[in-house]
Image (cartoon, rainbow, N blue to C red; front, side):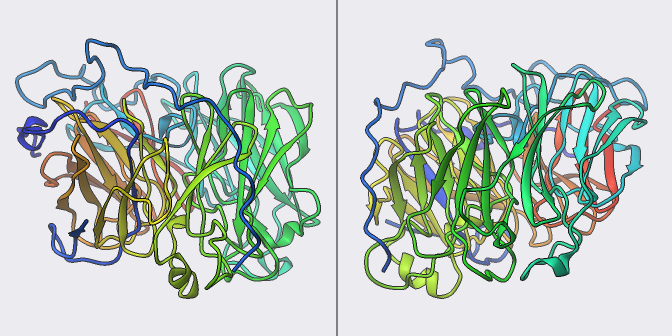
Length: 508
């Protein structure tokens, strides 16, 4: 294993990141390393924007704690894992570990003889990333069931079948067959419920609150936008729990058939009370479909990315965009590339990867199909062409990950189809591409310690040195669905696969 690198090798010279800046990426194919990555300095009228308080300062201690990445050598090491086994650990409550979708575990162990710990077959494919609650892995399947598995052994503690899945031919188009529960679940620590959204016979969508202690259903309610055709709306993105609300995003089915518009439904975690809704102000399409789902800011505002819309000329319709919404789902601000209309015409958009907020900054990361990597300001997204800087050369799908850098600044890892790409961001607003993994390593990354983990559709779990991109590990876990990403707890990764859940211990 390659374990002697230090974060400071690439962090040298970084300065603190500009406050109020976001990285957004839409990527096209490039060759390994940094080749293919380069630098570059009619719908309905737009709705009135909501008035909100200024974006709050990041929650970072004045001492800078939390801004320093642990060195691999010459510093404190993670505690060793028990020999041969999985160790129970802290809860993992949502996709990529937090509401910012950061995907960074600073204190996690780097790989030391990583290996399969257990594999548990379930009653359908697992598209969503599981959550971990009190030593239990909670996973949802396309079979319409939710399972509670012992994190140490993989034994099934309980199974709750919520609804029979819908056959693919019951939908006007699509490529998930059958379809039961697709989006990643999310835990609400306050009420103690794990929330999942089902697609049920009808076709309609329901939100369930599950008790992770035994699988009992504690709440259930309709989760569709009023007045829409649920059969044309796919619940693909991860659920978000923030500020007492469960946010449920919707895009369209594969094939973009029928009348649909990207939307988010906000439902109280208490199980009662009025729903909130946001629908992209376009005539059609603009799905909010990225697997990572919405992300939340410290003040509760919600950031989403939208897919291509039907409009190919005229006024910007907020498709192919990054949008900021209030916690009540009122539109605040947005950004779109100058070529948004052209991108709409060729099904190229920012919606294929959701936003990732950079730790300790006012920044976020997202990646899309069109090949542009955009630096924008969350305090003022700038509308069409409002980016602060731009890179090109990465086409990405799923969810990214981000970490602070020793000495200031931030680094992101993007799931490009040409290989996972490292992108560095400095305080002067300058973005530079770092290493790029081989093209076969393109799964949504997760950073544990100083290792970037990426799960491939063929079942290869690849661990890369976060500083250099050198391969540290390769473990076969079973084939997975596209956009799958790990969950983490204790000393193990928990992987969603086409057959169930696989656990990989990272050391011991």
